[in-house]
Image 1 (tube, helix red, strand yellow):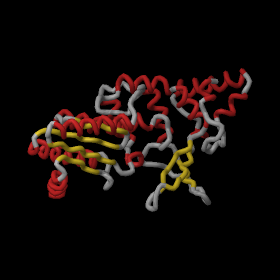
Image 2 (tube, one colour):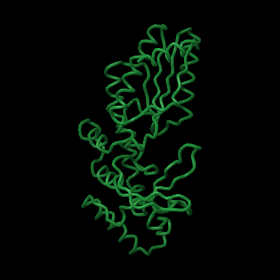
Image 3 (cartoon, one colour):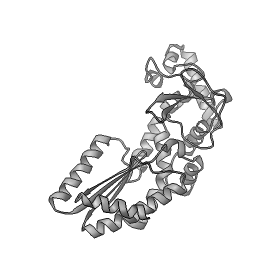
Image 4 (cartoon, helix red, strand yellow):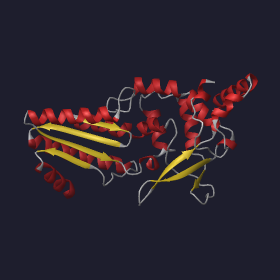
Length: 287
């Protein structure tokens, strides 16, 4: 009952046109039967075929692209809510040190710490660089094969039963919905559902090996992630900052490209002294 009460009265509904909150009205026997269905799903590691059809609602974002939001069916949403606690526990215990999407950490806190670090470096008269890389269409570029490979190859200890059920839904057929039409079924070759409770964790797994390799090879002073944003900070003598930024930037872009990702034009470089940015951009363009 607690899981059902977490849902708002009005939500975007999937193909089943059900809001899990409505199920609170079920009698005790109905609640037990719902629990039995979820236990059966986990025991067999398989979703009923009827639940594996998704709606992708396109919401206006800007003049160029729309923002896709995937609407799953109620049974999957309830399961995701029930399994949120163990997954949150995994993130708190196992999330790598470069990942800032953890409990107690917010985008505001990340920005304040970044600004404080740059202000201190400026006061000490160090040169510094803060490169903010945005990955274009991050969720749509993620290969589920990469997620599985990372989970099986590295010591990440992600719950495999939860991963198996989540990936079944992420690879399920979808219908794209606009204001006036709904598409035929589309079978995705890659991409994560935007809006799934596990999307952030699966995105974390997709970038895991890239960040691990970069930290091992180049020892950057600060190289961290916030979902689809990657930040690289260096400070010290100017020539050392330039060399490190160029090394990490080239390796990062190449590794992302091999995984099917593309760095967005929205990415920015902030430096002190300001003229350092122009020199870095010029040298990056040569590469």
